[in-house]
Every structure is written in structure tokens, then in C-alpha cells.
Amino acid sequence: MADLLEWAKKDNRRLLHVVYRVGDLDRTIKFYTECFGMKLLRQRDIPEEKYANAFLGFGPEETHFVVELTYNYGVTSYDIGDGFGHFAIATQDIYKLVEHIRAKGGNITREPGPVQGGTTVIAFVKDPDGYTFGLIQRPTVNDPFCQLMLRVGDLERSITFYEKALGMKLVRKVDKPEYKYTIAMLGYGEEHETTVLELTYNYGVTEYSKGNAYAQIAVGTDDVYKSAEVVDQVIQEVGGKITRQPGPIPGLNTKITAFLDPDGWKTVLVDNVDFLKELK
View 1: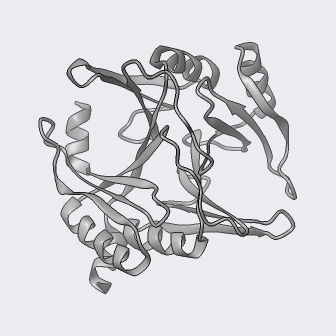
View 2: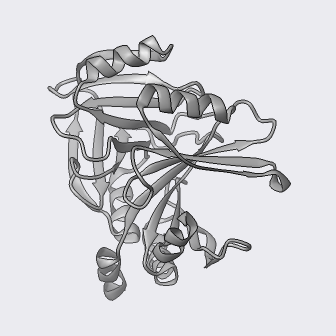
């Protein structure tokens, strides 16, 4: 077990993309490209399975965290639930970005200003499907897509899970007793250098509704089989469930494994070499 956990920390891992469902693919692509400045990286239609995908981000998938939008034929709306929090985009000029989004007809749900009890300037925007995007002012920006926030019912349990099962490191933890919440930032690098997972614990709230809109994150690994062994060991310790045993996806041959964390949030681990082949 100790050797497996040590291997997971040294494995070549990176947050690849986040998958979620939208009711109108063209509408969302237009909003993300025009309002946020994302680029449409690739698109595919699978008529025999009645769905289509679009990948968007601020740079190539080989080096950037991106969104994978899924449109299921004929489904125009989804329930986001109250467990999903927000995505976050870093910008050097939040006021300019907010005015740009407003001019494009975007829904600004929080005007730019300092975060509660702090100095960081933030704003919030809702996309056409109701997903919330936080905007964060930063002096320097590497990949603008900087955070994904999910709510959890037991923060220490979640930190243990993501550190051990996914080899992430805890980069920051902040307790705000006056506002009755604690956050933990986890990732594969420092917060200002890479995309991080922000887990939020609201005092006394142990369960959230997942809805059917948000799907999962994908993380790259050099060995899905060994990764699945690690995850299985950690699940026995803190909870969770493997939902797909490691192996190739039929027809695509990309090796993956999938699992749920103790709160039911899904992660898919993807073979790094196979993922790069998919992009060619």
C-alpha cells in the first residue's frame, strides 16, 4: 500500500478536462468563445449514440485544462443540483472582462469586488445553462481556467481521498468560521501555476444533490491499471466506488478507469499516451 501511494505521487498526472452537459451546443460555444475568449479546439458528432461533444479552452489540450461539453440529442436542460459550485477564470483586468461579458448579453450575478473577508477581487457570471463561472483578478495568468469548485460533506475525508487516490497535493486550506465554511485547494502544482480543485465544506452540511448536468473530471496517468489498484485501496479506507475497471474503451482503444469519491463526484483516469493519440 505504501509503495502504491508513493507511486501515485510520482505518476505523471495532470488535470485534462471537465465534462458536463449542455442544452444547446452552438449557443454554449458562442458564449464561451465570445464572452470568455476560449477557443473551440475540436468537435465530434456521434449520431448513432445520439450525442455530440465540443472541447474548448484557452490553449491546446496537450498543455491546458479544457471543458468537454456534451449535448444529448433532444435534451435542452439539466438539473445542476446544489453540490456543483463553479468554474473559475483568472484575468488581469476583471472590470474590463465583466463589461465585455455584459456587452455580449452575459448574466453578471456578482459585480467585481473584494471577496468576503479578503482582498482578492472576484465576480460571478452564469452561462446560458446556469453554470456559474467565478472571475478572479490576478497579476499574472498562466492558464486562465484556474479552478473547479465542488462541495463536499467531510473535508478531511475528501482531502485524504484526493491526496492518496489521485496523488494531488493540498496547496491551500482556509477556514472562515465567521462565514461557516472551509475550503481546500488541491492540485498538481501551485495554485497560481495550474488548475486546482477547490473543495468547499459548509459547516453542518453533509450531503448535496448532484443533479444530472455536471459529469466528471479527467486526469492523465502513465498507468491506468496501477492507478486503479491505488484507488481501490483508498476506497477501502475512506469510501467511494470504482465504476469502470481499467481497460480500453471499445472502438477508441484509449485505456481508462473511472470511480466515484466518497461524496459521489466522478473522476476518470486516462492513459497519457492514448490521450495524445486521440488528439492527433
